[in-house]
Length: 396
Image (cartoon, rainbow, N blue to C red; front, side, top):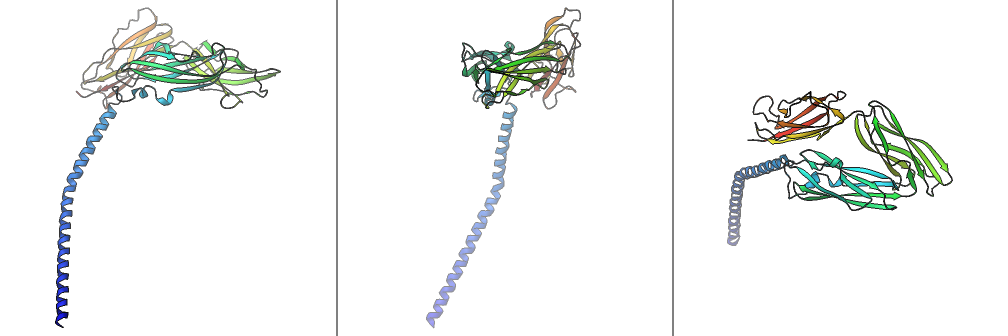
């Protein structure tokens, strides 16, 4: 009996000891948890501050992305994207030529200058359109790739066009063209031309395609042009013992806008996809025209009250003309030169412009940016060429 009572006392003592230990551990955990809960807001505030700082830095990087060239990245991707650096001419008849324009732009504040353009193959010449090798901010130009078979060569022709840039930083851009020169097809003319077409006038030109291959079922089945004002139509197909001749009628519609144009007409045969497209160059001029270069003038990044450097705009007419009036919807854009109505008419005018960023008043740019339209009134058939002007303000 005594032994039994002793055992009960021992069990009770151990239970009380275990309960006390559990309570102590729970209190310790609660204290630790409370301590963590007290420090968590401070940690969150620190993390939020770091995140805000990162967001601000990213915003600043995005805001300045198009201002200056960054030598640490492939900045030429902004000049012409890598996805636009290749072109396939497809099939080109022997002895004829085809053209394609690679468009380059300058989104940077610095001036971009093309020092040299060269081609790896004599079948393809490359040059800067109109010799425009210097690009101001937001300006554009084109590298023309002109394919023509030479030295009686036919078959696959690949060319690498190398563009060497020396400003704002030295860089090299490579473009690639592909074509298949074939001897079994010939065109009646090298290109379709619509020269000196009057405004609102409809004109037609005719092109014949001769096929002297082995496929007696060969046909031109379709003709397309990306310009909606040029309408091609298959007029007739004649089959001879050793030749098939297709006649294509190409109409320049009366609603073609005034100005010079260069487009590509694509004839489509019933051959396989690799061979079926046959390009034809279509170019011409409609009406009396005045061209503007650049089409967008960027005055730069200016502080409040600061004036820009003088920017020049080139106006070129198909005939001599006079500038009678300068109009801009923003009075801060000024023509530096004095317009003299009694001065002789000229075919080329160089118009100097300047912009003064207002310090106060209604003319202050909204959100730090200014965009306006300039209209030039002339005495040439009442033509009024237009172009855009841009500016971005910066904090003092």
